Image 1: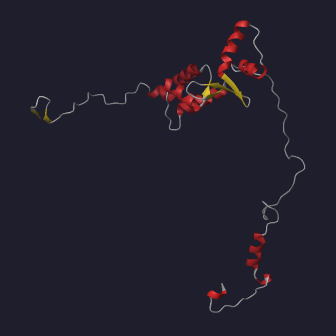
Image 2: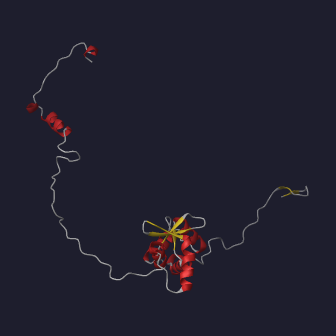
Image 3: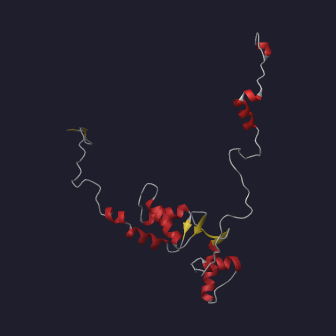
Length: 197
């Protein structure tokens, strides 16, 4: 590099006289990896908060309970007709990571849900990203496309649409003009060859 210059001089400035360079050099050499100098670190031997003991008071039985019991532990109902129906129905279900999934016809796997989660899914899909308020079969298909299933889907979404305030207010509203449409007037030769105006 010195060959590119005609003349140059090197000047050494002691660290004590150049505070800015001194600070920059200290920043470049970290004390510990991932630790900044300006942050005070303290290692705690025990947690600063107490974790409350949580226990399940009563186990809720859902429509998925017999299916999960059979798939995990092969537990069948005592009644022979119910046991036969369960064995037949269980072929459409699979457990992955403790969650129950249904094999769909057009969709690979649909996650089985129940209770509060169904209401949340219906609300999010019905109101949609752009406040679409879809209803009917379109809502059921969209819920299936998002990857969810429960046996009372049809009844639940119909009930939700009936109770939706916006759907009820704007359902009977006519969106086109009330007068009859004007026919399109064409000027030119007709099919018989005559000129129309």
